[in-house]
Length: 476
Ligand code: ADP
Ligand code: GLC
Image (cartoon, rainbow, N blue to C red):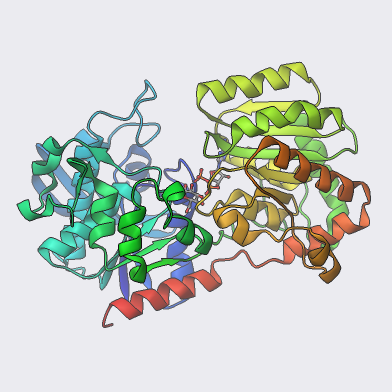
């Protein structure tokens, strides 16, 4: 079976979050299931550099007003088709935001063009390549499903990675989409008089998935449904939650070249060199207290305001923090205030640093993910794999991947971390204190680390579920 993936990010070429990791890892995971996945991506500068030797397989005389091409090649070990449209994608930096930190004003044009070009590829109109199915990710690619629905083509799967981003635009953009007039309807892309790219995809897809079973349930209600819960309830029979995995070749403490000292569950003592390296990078005083890390976008979704409120009381209890991330200015400032109030105990590195994120997972005692909602979350899974025990909010994929160290789980010897509910600073503080109490006891902490490192966070199970879904939809 041949599947065309359409996604606006691809690790390691273009990444703003977990979508890139997932799009980058799925092709290899699915190959093991007999699925050939070819990835359609926008031709951002990093993609074009990686495809310097690529073949041109299609010329558009005009796409959103200017000529464009489709390139075919291999980038980062993945079969790639790239939409080389310099007027839309030849922009360095964040793929969605301009230098002023705001959405590019032509994002509707950019991702409408991306989806309509993906639809042409899906229909087999380019380079004699005929996919059996198209798998579109998030709002940037979701309209591909609408093209399949209204104009014909193979079945389309749409995956929701985050319902908070819906691709909302004014109705005046509709003529640019290349969809027939009847698509501007309640059953199509119309949304409260305007357009929603994501809604258009969800309304028309042959199947909808999201990235954890818990989030699949949560989005059927008004709180996490974010205005789309009614539509999702109507489409519940085609909605499933398939948990993300992680790329266990890239995230492997036994062979990770980015960390100071490799280790396994059998040689946990070797981890201390990584803890020292982490403390040095974040200017933390050396001590034996619980060292908690965060690697995150700094947004309200991620509960960073709750974290900021919890830091001072926890530092008084002897906890230290290593914080890596960037995002909303108010949250960056709140964390910066905590860091300057607690020198040596709270280290903050503002920015995006993939290599440093490995150092953090290898050295921290615990990784904190206090999200208000979390479709899946990957950092807690990196934490499991690296023995940095996850302390997480009991929501979405966090609830599905971490086994709380409650009495029953401790007695059964299956706990892998700590959960807190509700999403509040008090509950978060309580969970960190539970972790701290166990950490002081040494032996039981190591038992949890061993459980965590033995947890199956690979793609194997979930890739098999995607493969089964694809075969149920396509005749191949
Ligand atoms: P989301 O996609 O909602 O941001 P995920 O947990 O699914 O959340 O994925 C986030 C990804 O981005 C992970 O791979 C994480 O390690 C990475 N990441 C987030 N912030 C940073 C940062 N400041 N530096 C390096 N990596 C980061
Ligand atoms: C989104 C979600 C995150 C998920 C990632 C990959 O960015 O916020 O929870 O892990 O997509 O699916």
